[in-house]
Image 1 (spheres, rainbow, N blue to C red):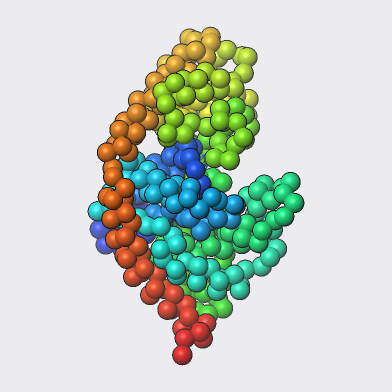
Image 2 (image 1 turned 180 degrees about the vertical axis):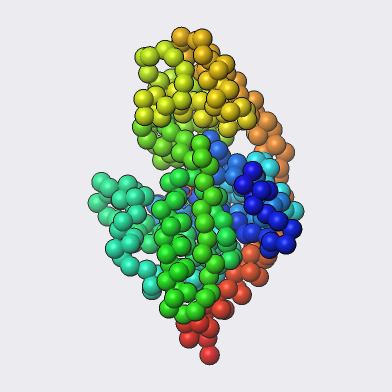
Length: 338
Ligand code: TYM
C-alpha cells in the first residue's frame, strides 16, 4: 500500500483530509471510491474526516432531514471502521473557520476557474435559477483541505478537478502572501475511483440519480441488492473480462466484486473464463455485497446517536484547535488582524 512504502521513520506524519456530504443515502460508490481509502490511511496519516453539511446546502435541504442525515453519515464513518482514536471526525459547520477561510480564498479565486468545474456544469444544467453557492462550492472545499496542512486528499475521481483547484488556490495564496498553505495531493484508487451506475454504466453511480436501480445504498436490504444487481445493465457478448470501453457494465461489476472481496480483477477474469452468461458473476457480486452490507448494518445498529455525538463533539474541538491556528496565520498574512 502506498503509504507504507512511501513512509520512513524520520518522515513527518502526513495529513489526510476528506469529507462526504450528508445528502441522504451513502452508496457503494462513496464507500469504495472514498471511505475504503480513508480506512487505508487512518493509522498511517493524521486523518481528519468531515461530514460536510455546508456543502450539502448548496442544493435545497429539508432542515429536519439534514440533521438526521448528518448524524447518520457520521454513524456510517464509524460503522465502516473509522476509529475515532486514530482519526478526527467532525461536522463541518461545527468549525466556523471553514466558512471564514472560504471567504478569504474566494477573494483570490477567479470566476472563470469556477465556471470550468465539471460538477458545476452538470449540477447547474437545466436549472432555471443557479444559486451562487453551487458555483463557489469548490472554494469551500479548498478551505476544508487547506485549513489542516493537508498533504493528501483521499477521494473518488469526480473530485480530482476540485482538488486540482485547491492546489492552485494554495499556490496562488503562497505566491501573494508568503508560504502559508501546504499544496495537497489527491489520493485516488487506480480501479474503483469511478463506480458506474448499475442502470447506466456510461455514467457514474450517483446519490441524486432518479432511478434507485442506479446505486446500491449502504442501507439497502438483501432483496434490494439482489434485484438491483440482477437488473444491472451488461451487454450481449456473454464473456467476462475487464474492458471499460467495450464492456462498461461487466467491468463495473468486476470492479465492485474485486474491491469488496479483495480478489484481483485478473483472478476474477480467470474464475469466470469458461462462463458464457453473466449469472455467475451477478450471483457472486450479490453475495459479496449482501455479506458486506449486512455486516456493516449490524455494526451501524449497535452505535447509538449519543456515541456519535460524543465523538463529533470531541472531533470538532480538535479540528477547531488546528483550524483556528491556520486562520490566524491567514488573517495575519492578509493584514486582517491588528
Ligand atoms: P460526495 O459527498 O459527493 O462524495 C463523497 C466521496 O465519494 C466519492 N464518490 C465516488 N467514488 C467512486 N465512484 C462514484 N460513483 C462516486 N461517487 C462519489 C467522491 O469522489 C467523494 O470522495 N465535494 C465532496 C465532499 C468534500 C470533500 C471536501 C472531499 C467537501 N470538502 C474536502 C474531500 C476534501 C463531495 O461532494 O463528495
